[in-house]
Length: 210
Image (cartoon, rainbow, N blue to C red):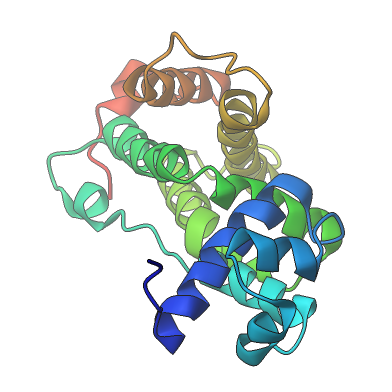
């Protein structure tokens, strides 16, 4: 005997099923009928909760993009250096994708589709990386370095790109290409390669993170 769901419970079941379908097929690849079948309701019931497929998609995007990662423990730890803080932040971020790869799938689709939610994905999930790297490199690079501001901005973009590409290979490919690499190893290796690329040496790494 099926248990009758309350209104809020039914709404959440629709959102959960829709998130998976939109992540797998994109907005245009999913129909209202398909979503209704996934939650075992009629399209009419679905429309009681959402006026349209666009309204449903917007809600899915908003719920995912508004999820904010907390890096406070890493940043405020006075004993942590730049490398340790950045590694800790990266571990938190990768773990969130490991727990829900749909975050990455729908973020990428929102970027391709030009959805307003793409800016929220950046604000809540990537901006902390950008701000921390920008601030830390600004403290470490001499003011006489040529094209200083461009170098700092480029470094921030490079690290975001490294992390995103690793996640794409691990979670969006038909087969996990990094299956033998633990999340901890992946985080450390990405940070190590990044620091070498931007020319931060051991003596600079040992400095306390601001």
